[in-house]
Structures are given as structure tokens and as C-alpha cells.
Length: 286
Image (tube, one colour):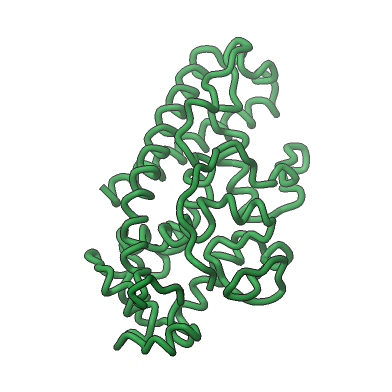
């Protein structure tokens, strides 16, 4: 696994390169289909208020968006949902998300290197290297979906106790360190340095690994940003829904034909469903 990364001054003005996936309304099929790409497109590109207009004026500005908003309302949701299917508690899912945000700088590192690596997983094929070795490239292996599933597969094989840890509602730094090591004891400095057991082999000046502490600190920062982004998007979705309901023709000149009505209904249904999903997550983690 990769060396821990600390938060920097990242901007939110990036795209996850998913515009190649789109829905053909004539054939009723997705073109260039990629499951994660479609999810991002639906949740972010097509339905986010930043790309919507009302009477020719943008509903919101990107400047108004919370930091890392695109990541937090797309990939983060996918990770959260998948972690829950693996038995993670809401707190456990936040631990996993904290790792992803820390190791990939809220997705920006995975985007910059175009290797879709969200968790700092080491391996081949690879496009880049760190002091820990080659960073695995998922670009031709299934993209973000492969990065997420591979992370959990590795957890199950190498650190099965961590699956127990993230299923709990209360998690300590000690739990994380043991879960991502042997599950029973802390390895010796020699074992730790060689990466034989640990997810992260970086040590502090005291020759100890503080990854658990770092992750818990990251959870606090991540949760604040996550909640802020979800609440923001829920409000923006409601704003779009209200304005579309009052002036559907102004927003979509094709609304009166069959295809237009289908698009309109699909967009509205997606916004409602997205708000339900975001609200459910907020209720779980708060």
C-alpha cells in the first residue's frame, strides 16, 4: 500500500472523465457503458445544479460548491454503499472513506495519474512508483469499480480482522492499527518496516506507526466535508425540482414531445432518488 498522504489545498474543478458514457434515448441503451462512469454521469454531470440553467442563467456557481464536492457526491457514495454491503457500520464505512480520501487526496491523485487508484494499493500493472513500490493501475481493469472491489478483496485476504473492526459502531486508533496489522499484535519494527503485515509501513520519529490515529483524524475532517456536500446537493436538487415544476418548458423546450417527457421524468426521478440516498446516509452518520 502507498505512503499516507496528507491533505493539501486541492480545488474542486476537475472531472472524472466520464463524458464518454451517455444514454441514447432512441435506442434506450447506454453507450460506452461503465457502471461507475454512468453513476458519476447521472449523479454529477447531468443532474448537478452547477450544470443547470433557469431562463438562461446558471442556478449556482462552482465557487459556491463545498471543497471536493464532485468526489463526495459520486465516488464517495459508491464506496459507502459497497462498504455497507460488506458489513461495515456507518462508522466503519467512514473509516474506509477516510482511507480513500487520505490515500488519493479526495480522488484528485487518482485522477491526476489516471490510474483510478483510490486506496494507494500497490501492484501491477502500474503507471507510477512511490517509495513503497509500484502503484497499481486500474485504468484497464475496471476503473474505480475495480479499485474499490480490489481494496475489499485485499482486506479479506490479508487483514480479515479489519473487516470485524469496521463492522463495529465504536472504533479506536488501536483497533485500526491492529486490524491493519496482524489483528492480534503489533509487528516488530523490522516486520513493520518490511510491510509484512501492515497496510501502511510509515513510522514517526518515535519509530511507531500512527496510521490509526491519522485515519481517525481524517474521519473527522472527511465527515464534515461529506455532510456539507450532501446537504448542499440536496438543497440544490430541491431548487432544480421546484424550478422545473414551475417552468418545465423554459428549461426543456422538448418537454412536450414523447422523448422530452421521458428525459424530464427520468431527470426528476433521479433527483428525488439521489436526495433519498443522501438523506439516508446523513441520518446514518449523524
